Image 1 (cartoon, rainbow, N blue to C red):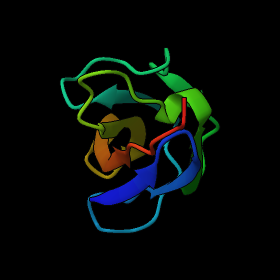
Image 2: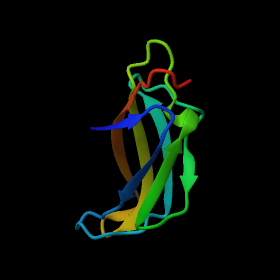
Image 3: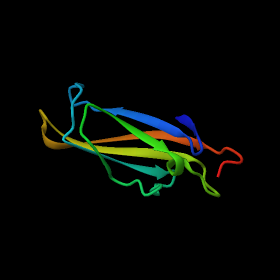
Length: 107
């Protein structure tokens, strides 16, 4: 798990592989940002991404804000579908986890 400074910027990179381990381009991709309790952060729910073998998700500002009682845990849940040897519209689910570190004086 990585540390990210509060209200800074982070670029998360995700790539996709099929059942044989080969890089693929999914037919659809979306992602959501949640806190440690699974609550959506900054209305970042089911944000669609143009399908590609590798995508970059940039989070900054309010995406990385903290509030009172916030432990800083964050998850980007990535959902995609692809067509492969096992069938069509197969699901891919991935989770990228990180912790936002509180920076005194940053609001």
